[in-house]
Amino acid sequence: MESLIKVGVRADYVHALFGSAARVAISLGHSHIVQGLVRCGHDANAQICLTGTRNMLLYAGELGRRDIMEFLLALPDIQTGTEHEATEKTALFWAAERGWTEAVRLLLSNLGTEPGPADLEAAVREGHEDIVRLLVARDDFCPNFGVRRSCSLWLAVKHDRDWAVRLFLDRYAVDPNILINDRKTMLVLAAQLGHISIVRALLERDDVDPNYQALGYKKAALHYAAAGDKANVVEVLLESPSLDVKATYDGMFALEIAVYKHHVRCARLILERMDKADKHLEGALMLAVRRGSIDLVRLFLADAQIRSCLSYAFSLALCQAALEGATDMVRELVKYDEIDPNRTYSTCFSREDTALFAAVRRGHVDAARLVLSHPRLDINHTRFDGTVLGLLADRGDQRLLKDVLHNPNIDVNIHAQGYQDNIIVYRQDSDDPHRKFIGDFDMRFTWDDTPLLRAARKGFFMSVRILLEDPRTDVCATSSEQRTALWWAVHWNRESMVRRLLEADSKAVNMRDVEGWTPLHLAVNLSRSESMLRLLLKQQNVDPNIATEAGWTALHLAMLCCDTRAVEALLDHAEIDTSVRLGDGRTPSEVHAPGDCDCKSLVQSRNAVR
Image (cartoon, helix red, strand yellow):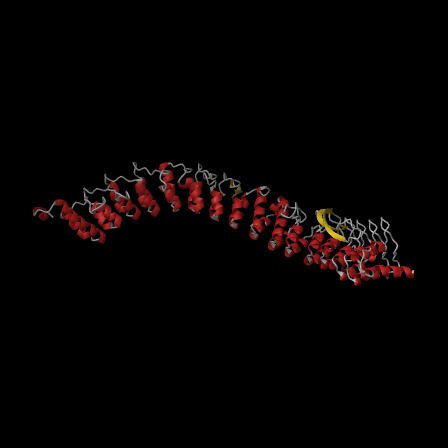
Protein backbone atom coordinates (compact mmCIF):
# COMPACT_ATOMS: atom_id res chain seq x y z
CA MET A 1 0.00 0.00 0.00
CA GLU A 2 2.80 2.39 0.99
CA SER A 3 4.67 1.58 -2.20
CA LEU A 4 1.65 2.47 -4.27
CA ILE A 5 1.41 5.83 -2.57
CA LYS A 6 5.13 6.48 -3.08
CA VAL A 7 4.86 5.97 -6.83
CA GLY A 8 2.22 8.66 -7.07
CA VAL A 9 -1.11 6.86 -6.71
CA ARG A 10 -3.58 9.00 -4.72
CA ALA A 11 -4.19 7.72 -1.19
CA ASP A 12 -8.01 7.78 -1.51
CA TYR A 13 -7.76 5.59 -4.61
CA VAL A 14 -5.56 3.17 -2.74
CA HIS A 15 -7.98 2.97 0.20
CA ALA A 16 -10.90 2.52 -2.22
CA LEU A 17 -9.02 -0.26 -3.95
CA PHE A 18 -8.14 -2.06 -0.74
CA GLY A 19 -11.55 -1.21 0.73
CA SER A 20 -13.10 -3.02 -2.16
CA ALA A 21 -10.79 -5.94 -1.49
CA ALA A 22 -11.85 -5.96 2.17
CA ARG A 23 -15.49 -5.91 1.12
CA VAL A 24 -14.96 -8.90 -1.16
CA ALA A 25 -13.02 -10.77 1.51
CA ILE A 26 -15.79 -10.19 4.07
CA SER A 27 -18.44 -11.16 1.54
CA LEU A 28 -16.63 -14.44 0.87
CA GLY A 29 -15.85 -15.01 4.55
CA HIS A 30 -12.05 -15.04 4.09
CA SER A 31 -11.00 -13.93 7.56
CA HIS A 32 -7.26 -14.48 6.86
CA ILE A 33 -7.37 -11.97 4.00
CA VAL A 34 -9.14 -9.44 6.24
CA GLN A 35 -6.47 -9.97 8.90
CA GLY A 36 -3.73 -9.53 6.28
CA LEU A 37 -5.25 -6.28 5.05
CA VAL A 38 -5.42 -4.89 8.57
CA ARG A 39 -1.80 -5.86 9.27
CA CYS A 40 -0.76 -4.17 6.03
CA GLY A 41 -2.19 -0.94 7.38
CA HIS A 42 -5.72 -0.86 5.99
CA ASP A 43 -7.97 1.31 8.17
CA ALA A 44 -10.64 -1.00 9.65
CA ASN A 45 -12.87 2.03 10.29
CA ALA A 46 -12.74 3.25 6.71
CA GLN A 47 -15.70 3.02 4.39
CA ILE A 48 -15.44 -0.16 2.36
CA CYS A 49 -18.34 0.50 -0.03
CA LEU A 50 -18.54 3.22 -2.65
CA THR A 51 -21.98 4.13 -1.26
CA GLY A 52 -23.13 4.06 2.34
CA THR A 53 -21.31 4.40 5.66
CA ARG A 54 -20.42 0.80 6.39
CA ASN A 55 -17.04 0.00 7.85
CA MET A 56 -15.58 -3.48 8.09
CA LEU A 57 -17.17 -4.23 11.47
CA LEU A 58 -20.68 -3.22 10.41
CA TYR A 59 -20.36 -5.03 7.09
CA ALA A 60 -19.17 -8.23 8.80
CA GLY A 61 -22.12 -8.11 11.19
CA GLU A 62 -24.56 -7.45 8.37
CA LEU A 63 -23.31 -10.50 6.44
CA GLY A 64 -23.09 -12.73 9.50
CA ARG A 65 -19.28 -13.15 9.55
CA ARG A 66 -18.86 -13.87 13.25
CA ASP A 67 -15.13 -14.72 13.26
CA ILE A 68 -14.26 -11.59 11.30
CA MET A 69 -16.38 -9.49 13.63
CA GLU A 70 -14.71 -10.89 16.76
CA PHE A 71 -11.26 -10.27 15.20
CA LEU A 72 -12.15 -6.66 14.45
CA LEU A 73 -13.56 -6.13 17.95
CA ALA A 74 -10.16 -7.08 19.36
CA LEU A 75 -8.61 -4.05 17.63
CA PRO A 76 -8.02 -1.23 20.14
CA ASP A 77 -9.28 1.62 17.95
CA ILE A 78 -12.27 -0.04 16.26
CA GLN A 79 -15.35 2.17 15.96
CA THR A 80 -18.40 0.25 17.16
CA GLY A 81 -21.10 2.91 16.86
CA THR A 82 -21.23 3.22 13.07
CA GLU A 83 -24.78 3.04 11.68
CA HIS A 84 -26.00 2.08 8.23
CA GLU A 85 -27.30 5.29 6.68
CA ALA A 86 -30.53 3.66 5.44
CA THR A 87 -31.46 1.07 8.06
CA GLU A 88 -29.80 2.77 11.07
CA LYS A 89 -28.61 -0.65 12.19
CA THR A 90 -25.32 -1.05 14.05
CA ALA A 91 -22.93 -3.91 14.60
CA LEU A 92 -24.56 -4.42 17.99
CA PHE A 93 -27.93 -4.92 16.33
CA TRP A 94 -26.58 -7.65 14.07
CA ALA A 95 -24.76 -9.38 16.90
CA ALA A 96 -27.87 -9.25 19.12
CA GLU A 97 -30.14 -10.55 16.37
CA ARG A 98 -27.81 -13.43 15.52
CA GLY A 99 -27.24 -14.41 19.13
CA TRP A 100 -23.50 -13.75 19.27
CA THR A 101 -23.20 -13.36 23.01
CA GLU A 102 -19.41 -12.85 23.10
CA ALA A 103 -19.56 -10.26 20.34
CA VAL A 104 -22.29 -8.41 22.20
CA ARG A 105 -20.23 -8.49 25.38
CA LEU A 106 -17.21 -7.05 23.53
CA LEU A 107 -19.33 -4.39 21.88
CA LEU A 108 -20.87 -3.33 25.18
CA SER A 109 -17.42 -3.07 26.74
CA ASN A 110 -16.42 -0.55 24.07
CA LEU A 111 -17.11 3.02 25.13
CA GLY A 112 -18.22 3.90 21.64
CA THR A 113 -21.16 1.51 21.74
CA GLU A 114 -24.51 3.04 22.63
CA PRO A 115 -27.16 0.28 22.80
CA GLY A 116 -30.64 1.30 21.67
CA PRO A 117 -34.19 -0.11 21.76
CA ALA A 118 -33.75 -1.72 18.34
CA ASP A 119 -30.90 -3.89 19.66
CA LEU A 120 -33.03 -5.16 22.52
CA GLU A 121 -35.97 -5.74 20.20
CA ALA A 122 -33.81 -7.87 17.90
CA ALA A 123 -32.62 -10.03 20.78
CA VAL A 124 -36.14 -10.45 22.18
CA ARG A 125 -37.61 -11.25 18.80
CA GLU A 126 -35.06 -14.01 18.20
CA GLY A 127 -35.25 -15.28 21.79
CA HIS A 128 -31.62 -14.69 22.87
CA GLU A 129 -32.07 -14.51 26.63
CA ASP A 130 -28.37 -14.03 27.52
CA ILE A 131 -28.07 -11.05 25.23
CA VAL A 132 -31.30 -9.51 26.55
CA ARG A 133 -29.93 -9.78 30.08
CA LEU A 134 -26.63 -8.17 29.02
CA LEU A 135 -28.49 -5.23 27.50
CA VAL A 136 -30.92 -4.57 30.36
CA ALA A 137 -28.08 -4.87 32.89
CA ARG A 138 -26.70 -1.53 31.71
CA ASP A 139 -27.86 1.37 33.83
CA ASP A 140 -27.83 3.78 30.89
CA PHE A 141 -30.07 1.64 28.70
CA CYS A 142 -33.62 2.91 27.95
CA PRO A 143 -35.95 0.37 26.29
CA ASN A 144 -38.74 2.90 25.51
CA PHE A 145 -41.60 0.51 26.28
CA GLY A 146 -44.88 1.56 24.71
CA VAL A 147 -43.28 4.31 22.61
CA ARG A 148 -42.20 2.34 19.59
CA ARG A 149 -44.82 0.39 17.65
CA SER A 150 -42.90 -2.89 17.97
CA CYS A 151 -41.32 -2.32 21.34
CA SER A 152 -39.49 -5.06 23.22
CA LEU A 153 -42.39 -5.57 25.58
CA TRP A 154 -44.79 -6.15 22.68
CA LEU A 155 -42.33 -8.50 20.99
CA ALA A 156 -41.86 -10.45 24.21
CA VAL A 157 -45.59 -11.04 24.46
CA LYS A 158 -46.07 -11.71 20.75
CA HIS A 159 -43.29 -14.31 20.60
CA ASP A 160 -44.20 -15.90 23.94
CA ARG A 161 -41.02 -14.87 25.79
CA ASP A 162 -42.33 -15.16 29.33
CA TRP A 163 -38.81 -14.84 30.77
CA ALA A 164 -38.46 -11.47 29.00
CA VAL A 165 -41.80 -10.25 30.35
CA ARG A 166 -40.82 -11.20 33.90
CA LEU A 167 -37.40 -9.57 33.44
CA PHE A 168 -38.83 -6.30 32.15
CA LEU A 169 -41.47 -6.12 34.86
CA ASP A 170 -38.88 -6.65 37.59
CA ARG A 171 -36.03 -4.59 36.11
CA TYR A 172 -37.98 -1.51 35.05
CA ALA A 173 -41.02 -1.70 37.38
CA VAL A 174 -43.24 -1.59 34.30
CA ASP A 175 -46.96 -1.06 34.86
CA PRO A 176 -48.48 -4.42 33.81
CA ASN A 177 -51.48 -2.52 32.42
CA ILE A 178 -49.37 -0.39 30.08
CA LEU A 179 -50.81 -0.08 26.58
CA ILE A 180 -48.50 -1.56 24.00
CA ASN A 181 -49.17 -2.10 20.30
CA ASP A 182 -52.81 -1.92 19.08
CA ARG A 183 -53.89 -0.20 22.32
CA LYS A 184 -53.87 -3.49 24.20
CA THR A 185 -52.38 -4.48 27.49
CA MET A 186 -49.93 -7.34 27.73
CA LEU A 187 -52.61 -9.57 29.24
CA VAL A 188 -55.08 -8.83 26.45
CA LEU A 189 -52.48 -9.51 23.75
CA ALA A 190 -51.23 -12.69 25.43
CA ALA A 191 -54.79 -13.99 25.79
CA GLN A 192 -55.51 -13.21 22.14
CA LEU A 193 -52.41 -15.13 21.04
CA GLY A 194 -52.98 -17.99 23.47
CA HIS A 195 -49.67 -17.60 25.32
CA ILE A 196 -50.64 -19.21 28.60
CA SER A 197 -47.24 -18.83 30.29
CA ILE A 198 -47.35 -15.05 29.89
CA VAL A 199 -50.97 -14.91 31.04
CA ARG A 200 -50.01 -16.87 34.12
CA ALA A 201 -46.99 -14.65 34.78
CA LEU A 202 -49.09 -11.49 34.55
CA LEU A 203 -51.90 -12.81 36.74
CA GLU A 204 -49.38 -13.56 39.49
CA ARG A 205 -49.13 -9.81 40.02
CA ASP A 206 -51.67 -8.09 42.21
CA ASP A 207 -51.70 -4.90 40.14
CA VAL A 208 -52.76 -6.45 36.84
CA ASP A 209 -56.30 -5.68 35.63
CA PRO A 210 -57.86 -8.85 34.13
CA ASN A 211 -60.96 -6.91 33.01
CA TYR A 212 -59.27 -4.21 30.94
CA GLN A 213 -61.07 -3.76 27.63
CA ALA A 214 -58.92 -2.48 24.78
CA LEU A 215 -59.99 0.97 23.62
CA GLY A 216 -61.86 0.87 20.36
CA TYR A 217 -62.05 -2.93 20.40
CA LYS A 218 -63.81 -3.20 23.77
CA LYS A 219 -62.56 -6.76 24.14
CA ALA A 220 -61.10 -7.99 27.38
CA ALA A 221 -58.63 -10.86 27.72
CA LEU A 222 -61.44 -13.36 28.39
CA HIS A 223 -63.29 -12.24 25.26
CA TYR A 224 -60.24 -12.84 23.07
CA ALA A 225 -59.51 -16.21 24.64
CA ALA A 226 -63.11 -17.39 24.25
CA ALA A 227 -63.30 -16.18 20.65
CA GLY A 228 -60.02 -17.88 19.74
CA ASP A 229 -60.86 -21.19 21.44
CA LYS A 230 -57.92 -20.77 23.82
CA ALA A 231 -59.37 -23.04 26.49
CA ASN A 232 -56.15 -23.23 28.54
CA VAL A 233 -55.99 -19.44 28.68
CA VAL A 234 -59.66 -19.25 29.66
CA GLU A 235 -58.99 -21.69 32.48
CA VAL A 236 -56.09 -19.61 33.83
CA LEU A 237 -58.05 -16.35 33.53
CA LEU A 238 -60.97 -17.84 35.44
CA GLU A 239 -58.64 -18.51 38.37
CA SER A 240 -58.46 -14.76 38.94
CA PRO A 241 -60.97 -13.85 41.67
CA SER A 242 -61.41 -10.34 40.28
CA LEU A 243 -62.32 -11.49 36.77
CA ASP A 244 -65.73 -10.24 35.59
CA VAL A 245 -67.20 -13.06 33.50
CA LYS A 246 -70.23 -10.92 32.57
CA ALA A 247 -68.30 -8.05 31.00
CA THR A 248 -69.69 -7.54 27.51
CA TYR A 249 -68.18 -6.89 24.11
CA ASP A 250 -70.58 -5.64 21.44
CA GLY A 251 -73.47 -6.79 23.63
CA MET A 252 -72.09 -10.30 24.16
CA PHE A 253 -70.33 -11.65 27.22
CA ALA A 254 -67.63 -14.31 27.10
CA LEU A 255 -69.96 -17.31 27.35
CA GLU A 256 -72.06 -16.05 24.45
CA ILE A 257 -68.92 -15.48 22.38
CA ALA A 258 -67.80 -19.07 23.03
CA VAL A 259 -71.28 -20.33 22.16
CA TYR A 260 -71.40 -18.26 18.98
CA LYS A 261 -68.04 -19.68 17.90
CA HIS A 262 -69.03 -23.27 18.84
CA HIS A 263 -66.15 -23.49 21.32
CA VAL A 264 -67.56 -26.12 23.67
CA ARG A 265 -64.64 -26.46 26.07
CA CYS A 266 -64.36 -22.70 26.60
CA ALA A 267 -68.12 -22.51 27.14
CA ARG A 268 -67.98 -25.32 29.71
CA LEU A 269 -65.23 -23.57 31.71
CA ILE A 270 -67.04 -20.22 31.75
CA LEU A 271 -70.38 -21.85 32.56
CA GLU A 272 -68.88 -23.56 35.61
CA ARG A 273 -67.78 -20.16 36.94
CA MET A 274 -71.14 -18.44 36.47
CA ASP A 275 -74.12 -18.37 38.81
CA LYS A 276 -76.54 -21.05 37.61
CA ALA A 277 -79.52 -18.78 38.26
CA ASP A 278 -78.04 -15.89 36.28
CA LYS A 279 -80.50 -14.58 33.70
CA HIS A 280 -77.59 -13.98 31.32
CA LEU A 281 -77.54 -17.74 30.75
CA GLU A 282 -80.91 -17.55 28.99
CA GLY A 283 -79.44 -15.56 26.13
CA ALA A 284 -76.49 -17.95 25.83
CA LEU A 285 -78.84 -20.95 25.74
CA MET A 286 -81.02 -19.43 23.04
CA LEU A 287 -77.91 -18.53 21.05
CA ALA A 288 -76.75 -22.16 21.24
CA VAL A 289 -80.12 -23.25 19.85
CA ARG A 290 -80.05 -20.70 17.03
CA ARG A 291 -76.50 -21.69 16.14
CA GLY A 292 -77.63 -25.32 15.96
CA SER A 293 -75.00 -26.61 18.39
CA ILE A 294 -76.37 -29.76 20.01
CA ASP A 295 -73.17 -30.19 22.07
CA LEU A 296 -73.61 -26.77 23.66
CA VAL A 297 -77.28 -27.41 24.40
CA ARG A 298 -76.31 -30.68 26.07
CA LEU A 299 -73.82 -28.70 28.13
CA PHE A 300 -76.68 -26.64 29.58
CA LEU A 301 -78.98 -29.64 29.96
CA ALA A 302 -76.37 -31.62 31.89
CA ASP A 303 -76.64 -29.29 34.89
CA ALA A 304 -79.76 -30.02 36.97
CA GLN A 305 -79.48 -26.67 38.72
CA ILE A 306 -79.51 -24.82 35.41
CA ARG A 307 -82.51 -26.83 34.25
CA SER A 308 -84.34 -25.95 37.45
CA CYS A 309 -83.49 -22.24 37.39
CA LEU A 310 -83.96 -21.71 33.67
CA SER A 311 -86.96 -23.92 32.95
CA TYR A 312 -88.69 -21.09 31.10
CA ALA A 313 -85.64 -20.53 28.89
CA PHE A 314 -85.47 -24.25 28.09
CA SER A 315 -89.13 -24.16 27.05
CA LEU A 316 -88.36 -21.28 24.71
CA ALA A 317 -85.37 -23.23 23.44
CA LEU A 318 -87.64 -26.17 22.63
CA CYS A 319 -89.94 -23.89 20.66
CA GLN A 320 -87.02 -22.34 18.78
CA ALA A 321 -85.53 -25.76 17.97
CA ALA A 322 -88.92 -26.99 16.74
CA LEU A 323 -89.34 -23.85 14.65
CA GLU A 324 -85.99 -24.47 12.94
CA GLY A 325 -86.56 -28.19 12.54
CA ALA A 326 -83.51 -29.09 14.65
CA THR A 327 -84.61 -32.69 15.23
CA ASP A 328 -81.63 -33.80 17.32
CA MET A 329 -81.96 -30.77 19.56
CA VAL A 330 -85.69 -31.31 20.03
CA ARG A 331 -84.99 -34.96 20.87
CA GLU A 332 -82.61 -33.87 23.64
CA LEU A 333 -84.94 -31.23 25.05
CA VAL A 334 -88.08 -33.40 25.26
CA LYS A 335 -86.25 -35.87 27.51
CA TYR A 336 -86.60 -33.59 30.53
CA ASP A 337 -89.81 -33.09 32.48
CA GLU A 338 -88.71 -29.62 33.63
CA ILE A 339 -89.20 -28.37 30.10
CA ASP A 340 -92.78 -27.28 29.43
CA PRO A 341 -93.80 -27.95 25.80
CA ASN A 342 -96.87 -25.73 26.22
CA ARG A 343 -94.96 -22.48 26.70
CA THR A 344 -95.58 -19.93 23.99
CA TYR A 345 -92.83 -18.10 22.15
CA SER A 346 -92.94 -15.20 19.69
CA THR A 347 -92.24 -16.40 16.17
CA CYS A 348 -92.35 -14.95 12.68
CA PHE A 349 -95.71 -16.62 11.99
CA SER A 350 -97.87 -15.23 14.76
CA ARG A 351 -97.68 -13.41 18.00
CA GLU A 352 -96.95 -16.50 20.03
CA ASP A 353 -96.67 -20.22 19.35
CA THR A 354 -95.89 -23.38 21.26
CA ALA A 355 -93.21 -25.79 20.08
CA LEU A 356 -95.76 -28.05 18.40
CA PHE A 357 -97.43 -25.18 16.55
CA ALA A 358 -94.05 -23.84 15.43
CA ALA A 359 -92.98 -27.22 14.02
CA VAL A 360 -96.31 -27.71 12.23
CA ARG A 361 -96.28 -24.22 10.69
CA ARG A 362 -92.81 -24.86 9.28
CA GLY A 363 -93.65 -28.39 8.15
CA HIS A 364 -91.02 -30.06 10.35
CA VAL A 365 -92.73 -33.44 10.73
CA ASP A 366 -89.99 -35.25 12.68
CA ALA A 367 -89.63 -32.40 15.16
CA ALA A 368 -93.41 -32.26 15.62
CA ARG A 369 -93.58 -36.00 16.33
CA LEU A 370 -90.90 -35.65 18.99
CA VAL A 371 -92.84 -32.85 20.70
CA LEU A 372 -95.97 -35.01 20.53
CA SER A 373 -94.16 -37.61 22.63
CA HIS A 374 -93.68 -35.24 25.59
CA PRO A 375 -95.85 -36.46 28.51
CA ARG A 376 -96.78 -32.91 29.57
CA LEU A 377 -97.99 -31.83 26.15
CA ASP A 378 -101.46 -30.24 26.05
CA ILE A 379 -102.68 -31.55 22.71
CA ASN A 380 -105.77 -29.31 22.92
CA HIS A 381 -103.81 -26.11 23.47
CA THR A 382 -105.68 -23.45 21.51
CA ARG A 383 -104.19 -20.51 19.66
CA PHE A 384 -106.07 -17.82 17.76
CA ASP A 385 -106.53 -20.24 14.86
CA GLY A 386 -107.57 -23.25 16.91
CA THR A 387 -105.70 -26.36 17.94
CA VAL A 388 -102.82 -28.00 16.17
CA LEU A 389 -105.29 -30.52 14.76
CA GLY A 390 -107.19 -27.66 13.15
CA LEU A 391 -103.97 -26.18 11.82
CA LEU A 392 -103.02 -29.50 10.24
CA ALA A 393 -106.47 -29.81 8.70
CA ASP A 394 -106.28 -26.25 7.41
CA ARG A 395 -102.95 -27.00 5.72
CA GLY A 396 -103.98 -30.35 4.32
CA ASP A 397 -101.05 -32.02 6.04
CA GLN A 398 -101.96 -35.69 6.36
CA ARG A 399 -98.52 -36.78 7.62
CA LEU A 400 -99.23 -35.68 11.18
CA LEU A 401 -103.02 -35.88 11.30
CA LYS A 402 -103.08 -39.54 12.27
CA ASP A 403 -100.34 -39.03 14.88
CA VAL A 404 -102.36 -36.28 16.55
CA LEU A 405 -105.60 -38.27 16.37
CA HIS A 406 -103.91 -41.18 18.16
CA ASN A 407 -103.56 -39.03 21.26
CA PRO A 408 -106.30 -40.22 23.66
CA ASN A 409 -106.81 -36.70 25.03
CA ILE A 410 -107.47 -35.05 21.69
CA ASP A 411 -110.69 -33.11 21.23
CA VAL A 412 -111.42 -33.42 17.53
CA ASN A 413 -114.17 -30.79 17.56
CA ILE A 414 -112.50 -27.78 19.19
CA HIS A 415 -113.34 -24.56 17.37
CA ALA A 416 -110.88 -21.90 16.29
CA GLN A 417 -111.02 -18.68 18.30
CA GLY A 418 -111.34 -16.43 15.29
CA TYR A 419 -109.35 -15.00 12.40
CA GLN A 420 -109.98 -13.08 9.20
CA ASP A 421 -110.42 -14.99 5.97
CA ASN A 422 -112.04 -14.72 2.55
CA ILE A 423 -115.57 -16.16 2.69
CA ILE A 424 -117.48 -16.95 -0.49
CA VAL A 425 -120.94 -15.38 -0.74
CA TYR A 426 -123.49 -15.85 -3.56
CA ARG A 427 -125.25 -12.72 -4.76
CA GLN A 428 -127.23 -11.42 -7.69
CA ASP A 429 -124.97 -8.71 -9.01
CA SER A 430 -127.64 -6.93 -11.08
CA ASP A 431 -131.14 -5.59 -10.76
CA ASP A 432 -132.15 -7.99 -13.51
CA PRO A 433 -134.56 -10.41 -11.78
CA HIS A 434 -133.41 -13.17 -14.11
CA ARG A 435 -129.72 -12.68 -13.27
CA LYS A 436 -127.94 -15.74 -11.87
CA PHE A 437 -126.35 -15.86 -8.43
CA ILE A 438 -122.59 -15.37 -8.73
CA GLY A 439 -120.09 -16.36 -6.05
CA ASP A 440 -117.94 -13.56 -4.64
CA PHE A 441 -115.30 -13.44 -1.90
CA ASP A 442 -115.87 -11.29 1.13
CA MET A 443 -113.24 -10.69 3.85
CA ARG A 444 -114.91 -11.53 7.14
CA PHE A 445 -113.95 -12.39 10.66
CA THR A 446 -114.64 -16.10 10.86
CA TRP A 447 -114.63 -18.34 13.90
CA ASP A 448 -115.98 -21.62 15.24
CA ASP A 449 -114.36 -23.73 12.51
CA THR A 450 -113.66 -27.27 13.70
CA PRO A 451 -110.75 -29.20 12.13
CA LEU A 452 -113.22 -30.98 9.85
CA LEU A 453 -114.67 -27.69 8.64
CA ARG A 454 -111.26 -26.17 8.07
CA ALA A 455 -110.15 -29.09 5.91
CA ALA A 456 -113.43 -29.07 3.98
CA ARG A 457 -113.39 -25.30 3.43
CA LYS A 458 -109.89 -25.51 1.94
CA GLY A 459 -110.80 -28.52 -0.18
CA PHE A 460 -108.37 -30.92 1.52
CA PHE A 461 -110.61 -33.96 1.36
CA MET A 462 -107.88 -36.48 2.13
CA SER A 463 -107.71 -34.75 5.51
CA VAL A 464 -111.51 -34.86 5.71
CA ARG A 465 -111.40 -38.59 5.07
CA ILE A 466 -108.87 -39.11 7.88
CA LEU A 467 -110.94 -37.04 10.30
CA LEU A 468 -114.11 -38.94 9.43
CA GLU A 469 -112.38 -42.18 10.42
CA ASP A 470 -112.48 -40.92 14.00
CA PRO A 471 -115.92 -41.64 15.52
CA ARG A 472 -115.64 -38.55 17.72
CA THR A 473 -115.78 -36.19 14.74
CA ASP A 474 -118.96 -34.09 14.56
CA VAL A 475 -120.01 -34.24 10.90
CA CYS A 476 -122.74 -31.62 11.36
CA ALA A 477 -120.57 -29.01 13.05
CA THR A 478 -121.07 -25.53 11.61
CA SER A 479 -118.81 -22.53 11.18
CA SER A 480 -119.60 -18.92 11.94
CA GLU A 481 -121.34 -18.79 8.52
CA GLN A 482 -123.37 -21.87 9.58
CA ARG A 483 -121.82 -23.92 6.82
CA THR A 484 -121.11 -27.62 7.22
CA ALA A 485 -118.48 -29.90 5.73
CA LEU A 486 -121.19 -31.18 3.37
CA TRP A 487 -121.81 -27.64 2.12
CA TRP A 488 -118.09 -27.33 1.26
CA ALA A 489 -117.95 -30.79 -0.35
CA VAL A 490 -120.68 -29.66 -2.74
CA HIS A 491 -118.87 -26.36 -3.30
CA TRP A 492 -115.67 -28.19 -4.32
CA ASN A 493 -117.64 -30.70 -6.45
CA ARG A 494 -116.39 -33.76 -4.57
CA GLU A 495 -119.19 -36.28 -5.05
CA SER A 496 -117.35 -39.12 -3.30
CA MET A 497 -116.90 -36.94 -0.23
CA VAL A 498 -120.56 -35.87 -0.37
CA ARG A 499 -121.50 -39.53 -0.25
CA ARG A 500 -119.07 -40.19 2.63
CA LEU A 501 -120.41 -37.29 4.68
CA LEU A 502 -124.03 -38.26 4.08
CA GLU A 503 -123.28 -41.80 5.19
CA ALA A 504 -121.75 -40.46 8.39
CA ASP A 505 -124.71 -38.17 9.17
CA SER A 506 -127.38 -37.02 6.72
CA LYS A 507 -128.80 -34.27 8.96
CA ALA A 508 -126.46 -31.78 7.31
CA VAL A 509 -128.42 -32.02 4.06
CA ASN A 510 -131.06 -29.58 5.39
CA MET A 511 -128.73 -27.27 7.36
CA ARG A 512 -128.80 -23.66 6.15
CA ASP A 513 -125.92 -21.19 6.21
CA VAL A 514 -126.34 -17.55 7.26
CA GLU A 515 -127.75 -16.72 3.81
CA GLY A 516 -130.18 -19.64 4.08
CA TRP A 517 -128.41 -21.77 1.48
CA THR A 518 -128.47 -25.55 1.90
CA PRO A 519 -126.12 -27.96 0.09
CA LEU A 520 -128.99 -28.56 -2.36
CA HIS A 521 -129.23 -24.83 -3.20
CA LEU A 522 -125.50 -24.77 -3.80
CA ALA A 523 -125.49 -27.89 -5.99
CA VAL A 524 -128.24 -26.44 -8.20
CA ASN A 525 -126.68 -22.98 -8.46
CA LEU A 526 -123.25 -24.40 -9.35
CA SER A 527 -124.73 -26.82 -11.92
CA ARG A 528 -123.31 -29.86 -10.22
CA SER A 529 -123.77 -33.28 -11.80
CA GLU A 530 -127.18 -34.93 -11.87
CA SER A 531 -125.79 -37.83 -9.85
CA MET A 532 -124.77 -35.46 -7.04
CA LEU A 533 -128.20 -33.82 -7.08
CA ARG A 534 -130.00 -37.14 -6.91
CA LEU A 535 -127.62 -38.28 -4.15
CA LEU A 536 -128.74 -35.32 -2.05
CA LEU A 537 -132.40 -35.74 -2.98
CA LYS A 538 -132.57 -39.43 -2.14
CA GLN A 539 -131.83 -38.77 1.53
CA GLN A 540 -134.93 -39.65 3.52
CA ASN A 541 -134.82 -36.47 5.56
CA VAL A 542 -134.11 -34.05 2.72
CA ASP A 543 -136.50 -31.11 2.35
CA PRO A 544 -136.37 -29.88 -1.26
CA ASN A 545 -138.57 -26.86 -0.48
CA ILE A 546 -136.32 -25.06 2.00
CA ALA A 547 -136.00 -21.40 1.03
CA THR A 548 -133.06 -19.04 1.45
CA GLU A 549 -133.32 -15.83 3.45
CA ALA A 550 -134.41 -14.18 0.20
CA GLY A 551 -137.06 -16.86 -0.38
CA TRP A 552 -135.30 -18.86 -3.10
CA THR A 553 -135.90 -22.62 -3.20
CA ALA A 554 -133.71 -25.06 -5.08
CA LEU A 555 -136.36 -25.20 -7.81
CA HIS A 556 -136.31 -21.40 -8.15
CA LEU A 557 -132.55 -21.55 -8.71
CA ALA A 558 -132.83 -24.43 -11.19
CA MET A 559 -135.39 -22.47 -13.21
CA LEU A 560 -133.24 -19.33 -12.99
CA CYS A 561 -130.26 -21.25 -14.36
CA CYS A 562 -132.32 -23.00 -17.06
CA ASP A 563 -130.86 -26.28 -15.80
CA THR A 564 -133.14 -28.95 -17.23
CA ARG A 565 -131.34 -31.79 -15.44
CA ALA A 566 -131.71 -30.10 -12.07
CA VAL A 567 -135.39 -29.32 -12.71
CA GLU A 568 -136.08 -32.94 -13.63
CA ALA A 569 -134.27 -34.26 -10.56
CA LEU A 570 -136.17 -31.89 -8.25
CA LEU A 571 -139.52 -32.61 -9.85
CA ASP A 572 -138.92 -36.34 -9.34
CA HIS A 573 -138.97 -35.80 -5.58
CA ALA A 574 -142.35 -36.59 -4.08
CA GLU A 575 -142.31 -33.61 -1.70
CA ILE A 576 -141.40 -30.92 -4.23
CA ASP A 577 -143.64 -27.85 -4.14
CA THR A 578 -143.78 -25.89 -7.38
CA SER A 579 -145.93 -23.11 -5.94
CA VAL A 580 -143.54 -21.63 -3.41
CA ARG A 581 -143.24 -17.88 -3.97
CA LEU A 582 -140.41 -15.41 -3.49
CA GLY A 583 -140.82 -12.26 -1.46
CA ASP A 584 -141.97 -10.49 -4.61
CA GLY A 585 -144.56 -13.21 -5.22
CA ARG A 586 -142.85 -15.05 -8.08
CA THR A 587 -143.13 -18.82 -8.40
CA PRO A 588 -140.33 -20.97 -9.90
CA SER A 589 -141.93 -20.75 -13.34
CA GLU A 590 -142.02 -16.97 -13.13
CA VAL A 591 -138.29 -16.56 -12.41
CA HIS A 592 -137.43 -18.51 -15.54
CA ALA A 593 -135.77 -16.34 -18.16
CA PRO A 594 -137.17 -16.46 -21.69
CA GLY A 595 -135.43 -19.17 -23.68
CA ASP A 596 -135.66 -22.41 -25.62
CA CYS A 597 -135.25 -24.84 -22.69
CA ASP A 598 -137.97 -27.24 -21.51
CA CYS A 599 -137.91 -26.17 -17.84
CA LYS A 600 -141.32 -24.47 -17.87
CA SER A 601 -142.98 -27.33 -19.70
CA LEU A 602 -141.55 -29.79 -17.16
CA VAL A 603 -143.07 -27.81 -14.27
CA GLN A 604 -146.37 -27.48 -16.08
CA SER A 605 -146.46 -31.24 -16.73
CA ARG A 606 -145.82 -31.90 -13.04
CA ASN A 607 -148.59 -29.52 -12.03
CA ALA A 608 -150.93 -31.16 -14.52
CA VAL A 609 -150.25 -34.57 -13.02
CA ARG A 610 -151.16 -33.24 -9.62
